[in-house]
Amino acid sequence: MIKTVIIQVNPQAPEEAAIEQAARLIQNGDVVAFPTETVYGLGANAFSSNAVDKIFNAKGRPAHDPLIVHIAGIQDLDKVAVKIPDFVFRLGEKFWPGPLTLVLPKTEKIPMNVTASLDTVAVRIPNHPVALALIRASQTPVAAPSANKFSGVSPTSAQHVLQDLKGRIPLILDGGSTTIGVESTVLNCTTWPPQILR
Ligand code: AMP
Ligand code: MG
Image (tube, rainbow, N blue to C red; front, side, top):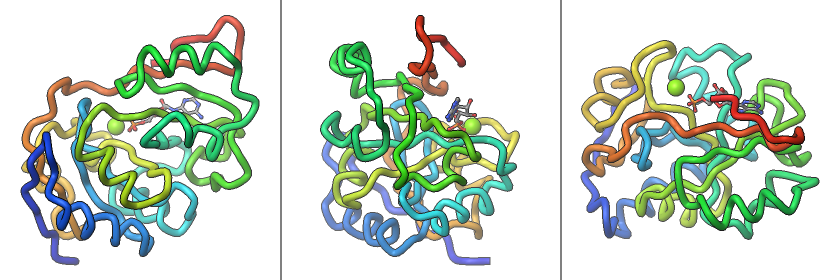
């Protein structure tokens, strides 16, 4: 058991000290729970397979279930994905930041446990000041599934996260209730026409 700390943050204008503390954990290869506009995510450095392993362990998530990689701006898309078709940039401009996840061929830098050994990666820009500030401060894309035990209900508050993951993760950023409360739409952009997967 590890001690799980909860830090309250202003969801509109998150306090810098809290973001810095969370970003340091991500940079050191640990996990942090944070709010997005959909549900709370459990994030780790998307370029570190050891860090991402901690997500699977904390959640009890089976290794065959791939994670979504979160970036803070479209300029970071080419760090995680290659062979990006033009229509993806148009979708990104219209729907990002927001609850749309796009599946694209992955870069070499994305370890295989992030994608459950697929050669594609799911990526989105979350529309939440806390999530965006955390990703920016971490200076790396952040892989994050919902912050609940596997097969549980996706958490829409820090209390939900605590119920499931207390003693299993070091930090929860508490930004209040999420506004949307359901998971993002997932669109496969490696086929034409693109296909809605979720
Ligand atoms: P979660 O973050 O817990 O909502 O789960 C992420 C979901 O995104 C997975 O369960 C898949 O349905 C989908 N997903 C993630 N990566 C891929 C991928 N490379 N190809 C297809 N679907 C994906
Ligand atoms: Mg989930």
